[in-house]
Length: 317
Ligand code: MEV
Image (cartoon, rainbow, N blue to C red; front, side):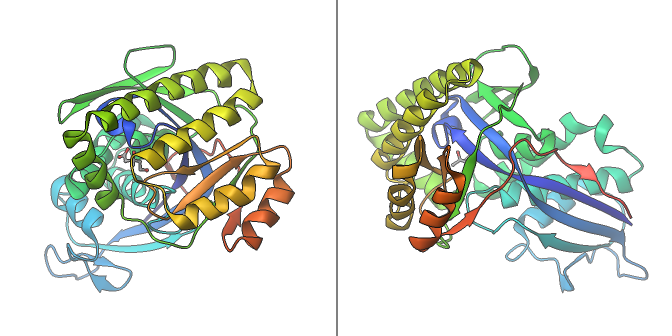
């Protein structure tokens, strides 16, 4: 039996635009997806179970895709336990997929630490296969942890190069500065697949949307420079701008805007994070307790998650 876990994430800059090869910055957070995977004693061949139910594509799409493609052993018994709300924009499907991939590698006699790049590639393939379209942002962050920069060219800290569907990304480690970020969950579940498809339609039909996507890329690279300088005030301004640009491509939601508006008076900057359409927002602040309270008063669920959490790992038995 193997126990694994992987972190959720927040995207500081660049969601959606990253699907088209623009840069993005993501940080692993201390909320984790945990999993226990064991061979099924006496189970019928190829019948896998997840949390006591027969694994099936409609309820367990990520499990099914990953196990069918990457597991050649016998039937598995999988138990899950997640601190990351599902469909919240905090990367629960990527954390699920990488912790499963890590468990499959360990059960097959390999070691997560020696196989991180393989875990990242296979997990991205799984997200892409299930969602129809995706970038390697969430799966890279869940795999490697800490901070991740996806860029258009190789820079310091390069981990790997990925190409898919006409887009390419250079995945880098990014030093995580000591930022105080409060996460606000709207409680409204957003479907990443639907939001990505909606932006795709706009991107294909409307040159203005393509302009917005490339401006998000510019804001992201300015954000990377501000992170390196430790310029929190500029970071906040850029987060606000990124939020307006995401609003312009239709992924904002009234529940998100309510939390962003509530956080802003006490924040350096605030934006939606992840796919949008509900899900989560983040605020960069020097007054985390006040922002926490403001988010709760506006009807959101605040999280004081720590940034820069470790990537997928094998946990103690
Ligand atoms: C979802 O967390 C981030 C998106 O950019 C999709 C992706 O990068 O695959 C919306």
